[in-house]
Length: 371
Image (cartoon, rainbow, N blue to C red; front, side):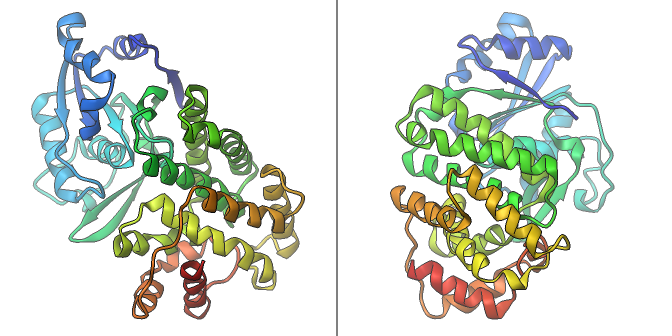
């Protein structure tokens, strides 16, 4: 499916066009609590009076959303008789909206996770309010059921239309701007070296990486054009991982966020910072079926995309960026290392091109926290 990208103007006439094109009469709006601070809030407040489209707002979910929130969302969607879904928010809002779309026609008396997903034609527009997760471009949604992470995957949940509004980034807290940007950069990097990479995914990775590195300083300084570029870069990086999925950097970072209270992108950047040079020193452990030479060539492609003379310089540049952003490692206790090592999902390690196991992951965690 070719995703349509819209660029928002002040009056959001693009949304009017999308609503009219899809003959929407009852919009189901999934949004996190950032909506109250956004310019588009006034658009929704006036929508019914102005063009006769009713709006049902669903915001009963939290970061790292739980299954019960999806249940409530589906029930409200069905009760409201809505005929389209729009998500405004970060990755959590978009993931909840994806699940509502997927389960909108399912039996609420049974567990959605056990029911077969069938594609539907509900119009779905997403407006990301952070430049990082790329959730608006992927077939994945993450929710938690009984405390366990559930990754739901189906191409029919990818929003058919994305609205890019760079004004949403102006008031984003600086730490969140930094960490979400690094999440997008990690997506581009990990997709590049993934065993599942293709020519298409590498094109996306290269484009996203170059856009992020060309604009990150302006983005941190809140330059309007750089903000707009970063939103697009995150979307393109999302398209890359939609093909390849993420690798060891993401597998290793999840427990760090809950143990130390740091943002996901911050943790992923720290993991990839140590994985990058370690991989270059352990090419003989290559498990990519295309071989060690192919992987070496891929690292050279990464270096070129990063504007570096070779892969060693590229790994050093990664460290320089995390240091410049002051995304430093937290302090780990001795007993944390076993918890971290055993938390890593082995399924995600299969996507990684260099063989990893408990004996290699533990010293990598020590390097992460030493750094």
